[in-house]
Length: 367
Image 1 (cartoon, one colour):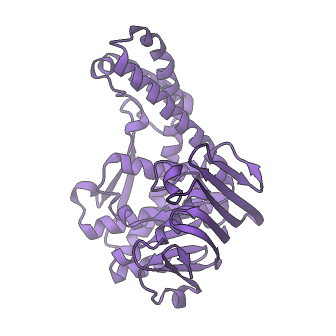
Image 2 (image 1 turned 180 degrees about the horizontal axis):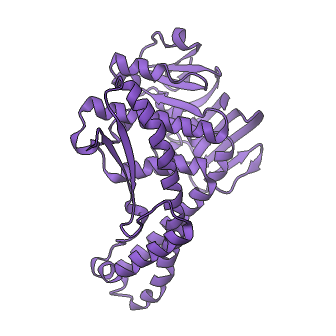
Image 3 (image 1 turned 90 degrees about the horizontal axis):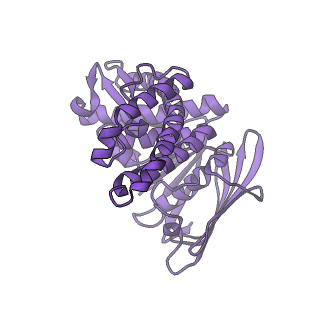
C-alpha cells in the first residue's frame, strides 16, 4: 500500500497544496505549528473516515473557510484508487472512492490502512482502559468492516439506554424500551468480544517478539484480554458469548436502574499488559513502558501485513525525538518494506538511512 499523491484545499492551515510522495520513506520537516501533523492527519482521515485529533469534521476546515477537500492517489493490492473527502461547515461530508460515494467508514478499510504512532502512544500502557480500547477499536475498524458496523451499533444502543436510565424518573414510559436496547447491546457486544479476543491473540504473539528483541532478550511481555466477568472463555462461539452477556446484563438490571449507568457490557473491556509476570501499568519503568508501546504498534503493523498481504502506511508523528538512540535504531530497523511518513523538527540522517524524499513544511506550504 502506498500514497502516491496528496492534494489539500482548505484543510487546516493548508490553502492549496500538492505533494508527490516516495514509495519508501517521506520525511516531513518543519518547526512546530507549521502543519506537519495536519498533513499526517489528512492521510489518516482518508483511510478511516475519522480524525485522530478532531471531534468533528468542521474542526478540520481552515479558518474563515466553508469548505475543505482532501484527495489522495493510492496504490493498494495492485489497484489504483482515488480517494476524496469534501468537508462542509453547513452540511454532511462527502467521501468518494474512484468517484463512487461511500456510505460507511468501514468501506475505506478496503482501500488502504494506516498505522499512526504519536508521542502520546508511548504512554498507552499507563493510561486508563479507555485508551487501550480505543487502540483495539481503531485497528479492528480498519481490519474488519463487520467490527466497525457492530461497534457503531453498540454505541448507539448504549447511548439510548443511558438516556433512558437518566430520564425514566420523569418519563416512566421510557422503561418499556429498555429491554430492546439491552438486547442490542448483548448481541452486538458478543461480536465485539469475538473480534477483540482474536486480535489480542495475534497482537500478543508479535508484540512479545518485538519486546524481547528491543529488551535484548531480558524481558518477556504478555497480553491478556479482559472482558465481562461472566465470559469465562472470550474465544467461544458468538452464540455462547451472547448468552453469557445476556446473563450478566440481567443480573445487573437493578444496579443499573439504581446507578443510572450502563454497568454491563464490553464498553469496559481492557487489554492487560504484563512484563515478566508483573502488571506493566503499575510496575513498569519509563523505559519498559516505551518499549512495550513500541512493541504494540509494530505488532499492529504486522497484523495488517498478514491480513492484507502488504504493509499498511506507517505514520510516525514526531515519535523518534521522544526515544533514546537504542530505541530509535530498533524502530528504524523494522520499518522497511512499506511506505513510511516521519515528521521531525530538523532534517537529519533518516533519508540516507531509509532512502526517500524530504519535505519542508512552513506555514501550511509544502516546499
